[in-house]
Length: 387
Ligand SMILES: [Zn+2]
Image 1: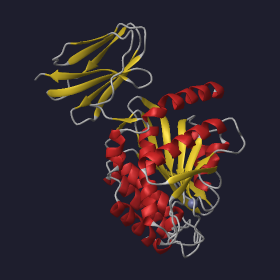
Image 2 (image 1 turned 135 degrees about the horizontal axis):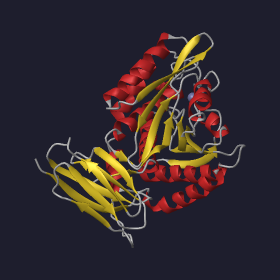
Image 3 (image 1 turned 90 degrees about the horizontal axis):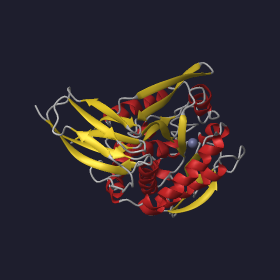
Image 4 (image 1 turned 180 degrees about the vertical axis):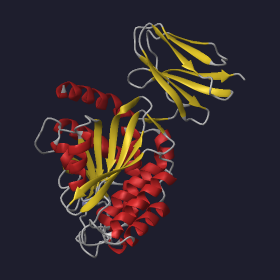
């Protein structure tokens, strides 16, 4: 089973290579905000030392949940676990994909700290994840995304280990990739022009080649969407490790100039490089868009299929619409409002028809996209609902 998946992923990674550089993605990455990143770093620093059992950790948790709510997310889960005398919380925010709702890109970074305020380790990663979540909130993606802020990383990967042991493994969660962002602040006063892209170089080794491919994709996205150079390094010592040990595919960002202040009282804004964090936010946003297969509902490239044959009727419609697949291929159709928000989606098998009940929708224009199994758009048409 695992081996078959590996081959599929290899094909997908190769097939997709040319599409990393997309104007639609550049338009979104251009909205990465220096001021927002700086504000969030200041805020995370001001909460103080975020060790298990501290009010600072709880206040940070509540602030993060409020942030995701403010950005428009509604699927926000506090996954609680016990560590010593304390109940701690992993924050899990899910954004559902249009085409592969049960396959997840995990973008994660821990929000607890050691003996300092942890503005670099890992305020930098958390501020970047917030920025990705802010910018992707209203973007359609084919794959689902989970933004996860783990707790008790500094105590020994306790939060991520709990998540893998008690949630993702028992639920058999279909994880496309774990993209971990931890300690990416750089060093004030140094030239911070390179980021380390981390690949799985440890046992179990079954997924190492696929991790190397995704890490290469991460490096390519960094070149396209930021001004940073990249080096490939070994992934170790952060929240991707429990996933890696469970056989999942991982990658990550880590600062190349390593701060000597992390885990101490000097881990603050004065000792990191905010511009470097912003560049990594750009690289991360571009990479997340590509890895989750974000797409523009209106301008998704139509591809030619040899045998595709679909009938959609009636149009204009009133209460229901029939979509008939007379081909021998599996298609998925998605209906969007004119604001780009998904209304419904349905997979449609060869030689069958699907009836969508549209009675509850208000009159007006809608968009129907029909996609093949790779997510290529076969048909796009305007639907009109009459009163
Ligand atoms: Zn860290």
